[in-house]
Image 1 (cartoon, helix red, strand yellow):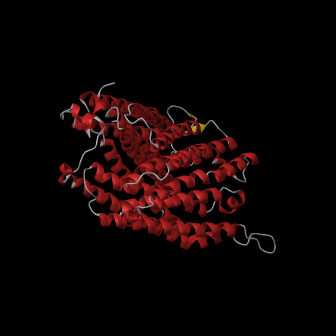
Image 2: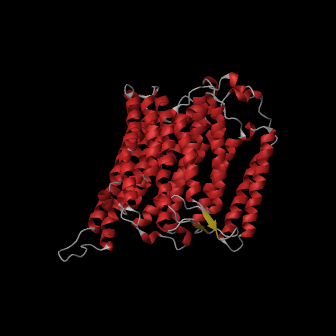
Image 3: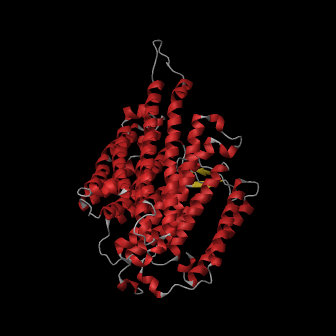
Length: 546
């Protein structure tokens, strides 16, 4: 890692880390007797660890000019391992929370272990820590190969990766301490939000600098999706997190928005976080790794472009369907519902395009579990987007909203779509990056696939059943015009489904554990065949300084 940095870059890394450490110590000093104090010490300790790592490798020989003849993949390699570690941590917390819902007496007698604090650790961990690291790592790989251009320097991608994980750690440690904005997918407080803006702007700049240096005239569609993910998430994050802190010495802040405007801003952000973080970014991943693994061109490049513009335009207007039957004006609710239905077209274009790409390659899908992960991801993407459009219809929403049906819908997307495409991409990337002909054990990849399938189906079907039963019980009236069932009655009816959900989550969790073991074993044995695998790299003409 440090060996790939020049002496100047190592010095800059130490200076930047020192500056961040100073900021952390200032936070701790200003926030005495406030939760901000602990957050500041976390920042300082994290920075100190980074400094120690850089100093440990400071006197290693500098990389030579020959480094410019190959792509810079060290951040991608680190990002893959970090993402898998976060997957295990975040999914473990999620499964623990699932068991708590089935057996509340399992709650530990301490504040940090309560449902309200653990649940955002799970959601942030899965969406942003696991999913975000996967997107950052794969985007660095994809932009270099599709542009035939090396990343412009070695330090900036490390700043993005290391800085982003600092945000994740600070955010989740804050939840355990009770620090939260109480906004879905936007729980981190103001100081973490500011840091993420700095990291994210650097990420966007790095991506644009790489594209500007490209030797391939055409910008491949995967880069369009990655850029939409990076740019729009920045806009969403900044607007939704506009807030005024109580003071610079307090962790607490207050949103600039209030009432229904705050709700609308939150779900404009929340649904578009799904759109551009959990959809656009992973579609970029799919459009690169699926055809490459199948060794077939995209079925229709025109469809991919039409789908891109449909998704990026329609999604921006759909967030208000989360606020049916609220104080939000009816015309705004109707607008969200209408665009949600229209979204089915570009969404199915992407899913259909992916599956049509596999025509003539189904024997590879049968034999290659990595490709099968991606195929199943495309299927779940199509099913989940249909379900989302269906649930946005107001009468359907009256049954589904506030029930476990929504939980089933979300996890069909995160387990069936996001996780599957990530695992398939990682199982493809690891042998490529570490110069291995295949994974350490293809049987373990196969086992992971079936565990992921079984866990997803058990989880999703249990929540579908649970949610529909909930919705029906809550709206059932007796002959006297009062509710037939109490809320406690619905909880009792949910119990077997909650147990099934926790079992499904545990089965799914086993997969990343096996996957990480398989990847580590592949990496450890990579040197055995390194000399036999052809290295890829940018065209030599591009190494000239511009």
